[in-house]
Image 1 (cartoon, rainbow, N blue to C red):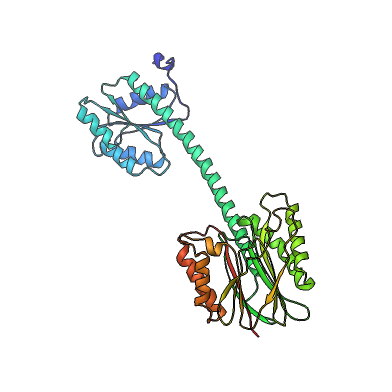
Image 2: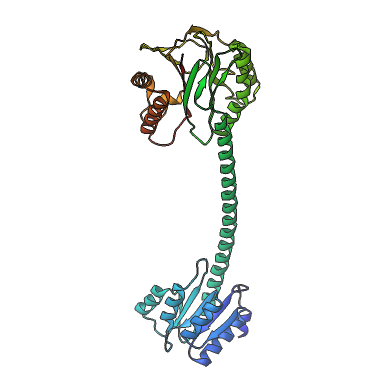
Length: 396
């Protein structure tokens, strides 16, 4: 067997071979010749013994005779293929005295990868083993890569879960900034908030003013998700200072300056700021926000379209506030553009006005339910933008 030892064919290391043959002389001769090629070899005297040996210590290559008593080679191959654990690889070389195409086809159909005719051609067997060894090595490399990919996937999954938990916590914190629907001085209010992600850039609040009255704001920060949410949350406290100062223009200027100093390209927001006087006077400052709707108690909707550019968009003076009567029973609707633009069939401004008119005699909570139902009906999938609505009523 010196020609085997000096053969230029590759001898894959750490490749185990199980030889199954019921003829002890042939079995030991084949095993010795394969071992001389540098492979780790075990033997089994028949199919049953080979099946038990393989399941106890899985080989890389099975070299099996077809004709054996009890469990023959075909049954052995089928048995091992059926009991092969996921991720395991087994290369099967079937030895047969038949060279008929039908017999060879039956062996391949049973799960054999290669066949060697008997009497045994050792060069043919060595070629089959060399091919099997390369496949075993490639399979091992593939398994290692799959294991690395699985570990990377698990790390990404854990990171995603942690990020989602963080976002859920952030969403809960942001939602706690929203006011509870209630009576505040001369007004009462209720609201709807549907962020396109867990957190969003829409934010609003209502706060009492010293000496009576109330202050309210509704902003829509450019963008979506975390960046927009962080900016809106940061601006929240700054905006509430207007409840004490009563100077809407100064507050809007401060917000615009903060956003202009932000390095991000989309660091601007639309805003509607409102002061409610106990005597029934509404002071409203708009900066690029969708036109608020004023619903009079006696009927009739007015779109308050006066206003300037969004805050922080460019360095220009903020607009002058608008002053008008806000009488008992009147309602003011402040909303983001997502309310009228989102959905497969957007509500639109006409739909907004129709919904306001239809719900004019309803309690505020019912009005909010009507708007929520309309958004759910029309969205047709995930929201493409944050949706929010703040409805304020003079309850005197």
